[in-house]
Amino acid sequence: MKEINIGDIKQQRMAGVLDKIAHKGNFYFAYNNKTIPADSMVSVSGYHGTLFNLLNQLLGDNYEFKEVPGYVVLRHAPGKLRITVEVDKDPGKQTIVKGYVNDVITEKQITKASVYEKNQLVSTLTDDRGYFELKLKSWSGSLLLTVSKENYRDTSLYVLPVVNIDSKHNNKSYQYYPDEGSENGIEHSRFARFFISSKQLVQGLNLGNFFASAPYQISLTPGLSSHGMYNSQVIDHFSLNLLGGYTAGVKGFEAAGLFNINRKDVSFFQMAGIFNVVGGSSNGIQAAGVYNNVLNNAQGIQLAGIANKTNNFTGVQVAGIANADQQAKGFLIAGLFNRVKAFNGGVQVAGLFNTVGQSKGLQFSSLFNSSANNAGSQLAAVFNTSKKVKGFQFALVNVADSSDYPIGLINFVKNGEKSLALSIDEALMAHLDFRSGGRVLYGLLGVGYQFDDTQAKYALDIGLGVHIINHRKFYLNGEYVTQIITDFKDKTYQTNSFKLLPGYKLSKLVKLFAGPALNIISADVSDNVKIHGWELSKSISSDNKLTALAIGVTGGLQLVW
Image (cartoon, rainbow, N blue to C red; front, top):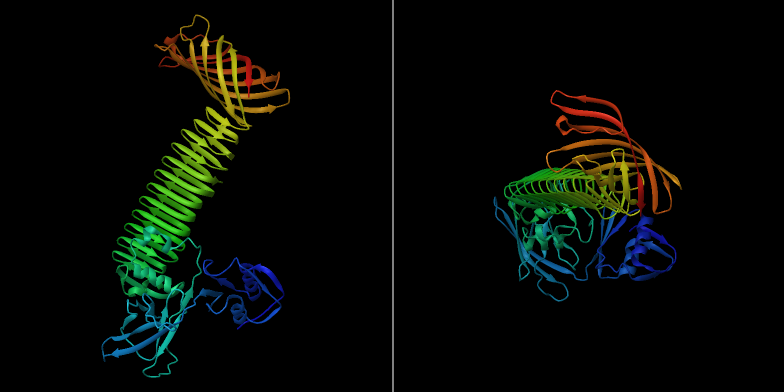
C-alpha cells in the first residue's frame, strides 16, 4: 500500500520501469524473467497511487504480489485454488488433517500441490485425485494450512476448532531468499537431482524461496528426516544426516556419513564422507572425502579428496586431484590440476598443470601453466603460455604475446626479440647461438666447435641474458652462459661465463657485438684443460678438481627478427 509517485514514462522496457519504482520505494523486485515480460515496452502517464494498483496496471490480474522484508516478489499465478479440509483428532494421539485441492474455475483436481503448516514444519503433496493427508504431532488452537502450486496463487485456510486467544503463541519466522542466478541452484544440478526425489523437487518449485528456521534436524536419507518432506524449506543450526540429507541450508554445523545437499546457503562448518553440494553460497570450512560443489560463492576453506568446484571462491582450496572454479582468489592446491576462468590474485599450485582464462596471481606447476588472456607470473618445469604477462615466466619454454621477464632457454614472445648469432671466443671456439626473449630478459641456447687440436671440441651453450641499454644504434647486453665441453668419450668439463656485450646495429636485422667475459673453468686434472685468455687464478683441490678464473673475449655477428 506504499504511495508511489512517478512522472511520464513513454515506451520503456518493463525491467527498467520496475527498477525505477524499486529505487523510489527503497526496496527490490524479485521475479523470474521467463514469466515476467521484462523486455516488453510499457508507458505510464504521471501515476500517483499505491504500489499495488500500479503493479496491477502494469501486469494485470494474472500476477500475484508478495511483500517480504526488502523485497516485493512478482509471481505469475493466473490460477486460483480451493482447499477443503476435515480434521480427525484422537485425544492423546496425533491429529490427521485431510482434504482436497481443486481449481476454483474448472473444479479440476490439482495434483502435486504442496500443502503445509508453517509453524509445525510439516508438508505433503496432493495425489492424482487432489487428496492430501497431514499428520500433526500436537495441535491446539488455530491451524494455518497453505497450498502452493506453480502458476497458481498461494491459498491459505485457517482451521479453528476452538478459538483461543494466546499472546504467547510462537509463530515460526520465515525468510525470503532471492534467486542468485537463473541457471544456478540445486534444481539445475543433474548430479544433485540424482539423489533427490521428484516429490522433493516439486515441493521446492511450489513453495519457492520462503524458508523457515529451526534449531536442528536429523535425517536418515533425503525425505526421511525429523522435518519430513518439509526439510527442503528449513534452515537449521545443527544438521546431522546419518546417510545423506537434503535441507534448505545450515547456519552452524552439518555432518553426514555420505552426503549433504543444501538448496541455499551453508555457513561455518560442513563435512561429509563422500560429497557436499550447496545450491547457494558457502562461508566457513567445507570438507568432503571425495567432492565439494558450491553452485554460487564460497569463502573460507575447502578440502576434498578428489575435487572442489565453485562459481566464485575466496580462501584456501585443497583437492587431491583438481580444483575447478569460474572465479577464484586465494591459495589453490591440487594434486593434478587447477582450472579457473578468472584467477583474481593469490597462488595456484598443481602437480601437473594450471589453466586459467585470466590470472593476476602466481601459477606454479610441475608440467605447464596456461592462461588464455593475461597472467601475473608463471613458474613451470616444461612450458608456460599466455597472452600478456605482467610478472615473470620461468620454464624451459615460454610463449606469450607480451612478456618482459621470461626466464627460459626458448622464449617465443610476439613483441620480443629473436636472433641467431655466429661468434668466436678467446679459445677460438665458434658458437652458433639462438637468443629469444622479451623487452628485458632473454634466453640462450646454442652449440660450439673448437677448431684447434684440443680433443674436447664440442660444446653446448645454455644461458640467460638481460638487455641493459637499447639505443637506436647502440646496445649493451649482459649474459650468464654455461658451456658444457666434451669429446663425447671420456673428457667433459664446464665453463661458466659472465659476459658484457656492447653492440652496434648495422640495420634492423643485423648487429655486431664484442665484449669481455669472466670465465670460471671447472674440470678434472686428468682432462688437461688449456686455460685461454688472461688467467687470474688457478687451484687444484684434494680430489684433483681444477678450478680456474680467467678473462676472455667474445665477438660476432647477429641476425635479428
